[in-house]
Length: 533
Figure 1 (cartoon, rainbow, N blue to C red):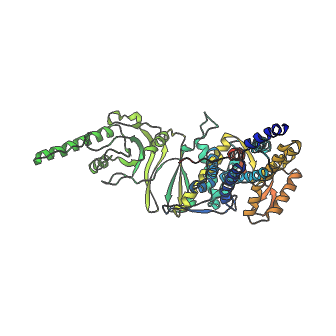
Figure 2: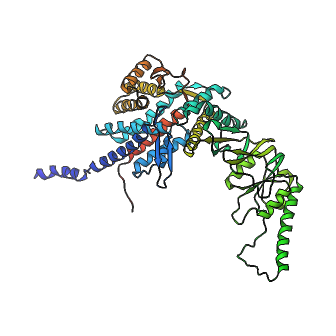
Figure 3: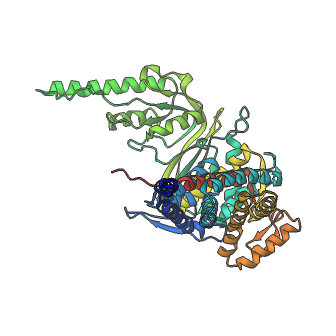
């Protein structure tokens, strides 16, 4: 009689046991897919990293070394792998540089998670220790950092050129790095010293010349030629510039209409009215002393007609037409003027003043340059040149990274060594910290500390050195207390990397580690994928 009573609880236990195999499989699949993405960009890390050639479906070809760009253009279908693409995007937004680093670190952490999971450690435990590791890592990095002043132009140029060294245009880093520094420093607002809006730096790309011809223009550059319809001026000194958003052309009704003309006198009257209408507008414009017009592109009708261009040329007014809608804000900020939406509001106090507006020939095309602007807003324009479109695009992306690096330094004024030094130091200190912790946590922290060695390992591997020997020697150096020992890729050995001027902003490293750990924790927590059709 007693026997069934004993077997009762056991049967309920077997019923409540759920099969965990599927969850492990999904986790495994997610991690493997995300690691495949990380391995795809791993070879493009560091100054000796390779470039990727991306061929899109539309037949466009992109050559780039920028992690965020590569992943952005990749058609990733697996949801967990998409998270790594998002990860590099968020690093691009937060720091701007280090987009490859963050994905590589993420991939290495995932690899360690696989090992830990297969040893039977619960994902939540792994996730919690990861969180602790990231907090501790930021502390370690902050302790290593060297404060920097914005007036110290040398250090800023060093960090910008470190960022440019891993790019395709690295041979021009001596030119582009100071250019990036000056561009950012010229838009820093003294009222808000730690905020830089990169939208205040406009990058204009122009085919022709080489990257050496890239220059920074104090003023405005339009990638268009002045309209030559009726022999208008192409160079104006002491310019008074108006930015207009209305059309200098005969008015049209709002509804579709057709006018029936029965005889010539009516036709003459129509043409005469048109002429008078346009002349009336141009007289109002000329009365304020305005001699340069920037005309916004119009959707409703032609912004200017041949007739109005003819009269504008007679009035000796230089015209730049088809200015894009989204450039208006930048132009008005630079010229320190107001956009004019209606001819009735055309007053002198809304004009901008400049010493010189002229049309310059560049290669086979022309651009309009405005220089010597009176009380100019805090903006700047960089004119990027290059021998072919691929080089120009890559130069623009590299310049953007360099600008972001300096923006990071303006936000958080600390420098840190590059060349794999901070990662090895982190690995060493976290390894020592893991010995203090007890239980599963210490085990997890130790394996994550090992994961951080992937950066120096990959740097050495991409430079064609022996990765195992280099990383071992690095560990040895750091254990002896040389905090700033890193891999010198040019000499192929280990040196004090701060003396070699390989530096990066603290923000790039800290945000790389916090974002990577956050992403990995998220992937770990997923145990099932449900597709909804």
